[in-house]
Image (cartoon, rainbow, N blue to C red; front, side, top):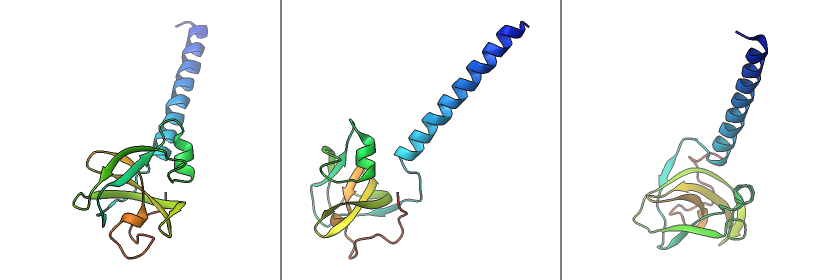
Length: 127
């Protein structure tokens, strides 16, 4: 095998591995993979939000301003899988936002609408 081609192949493979590793880090950071808990809302038509144009803004401080796109709505009878929670824009006196999976969508939802008496959910990790 030609030594020059071998080195080019090694550099190409190393660059590809670095790219895949970096992309995997973005994917795992952008969609937290933790133990999940199921909850329900106390009302209907609760917005699930995201910001496809600027996901880091939405993840940094969730709320209607940073997560302007409404990707779906949930109703009181639909289970919501909550993956993590973080502080964001205060809604109804509750500063927590939840990274959720509904039957149809992924996105952030205000914890204010969860059928639970306290702001912070006990069995959900921080994002």
